[in-house]
Length: 246
Image (tube, rainbow, N blue to C red; front, side):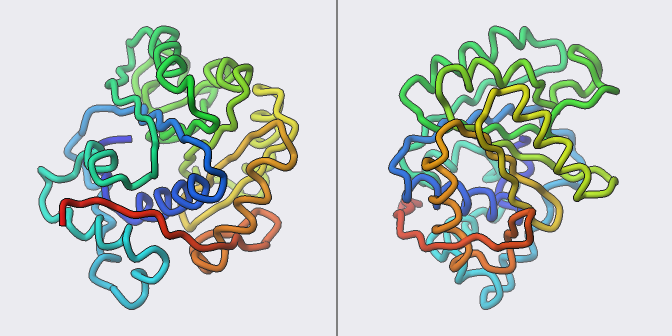
């Protein structure tokens, strides 16, 4: 995650999904931003949806109104997610992650921060590790590595992971990543929900925990924005309040 991405269309969908999970489960969500330095690039400028009120506002009107308040680059910062209560009762780990970071310490501190959280969301720039970018290499801060997930799974956390689609066959990619995620975490269940450019992987150990919550919560509100990898859509409503100071 980079601050320059804050408030774009991927954020709208991401926060919408997490808000649904938080309200329906009553679980506290830990948000591990995996924050990296802004690079001045064009990523994060996908904000034209905010001008298309009738098309997008109804998915989550309080969230839409909050993100509409981001009107300048100085407001594109993840601190507003916490300040505006975008994810109800969430805990955040906001330390900057560098390519040369002591990642074991970084994720160890994050796990301590999320002690009281039943669900942890990871928000890497790109997504899960690739063989071409080992830890410590240039751009490794943009990836989440399999071994870094294991301690969170061992602590009984359900995991939600943000993943940009690479330019590959998506159906095959999701199936392969899901299998690797299941192996890395020992999860009983792994599922995936995708948008036009992003797939969210969810790993959990209890069959009756987060799965029915998402399936019963997301689709009615977010129809045409999310779909399950088996082509079924997600369902639900959300009423969590957002505080933007109004």
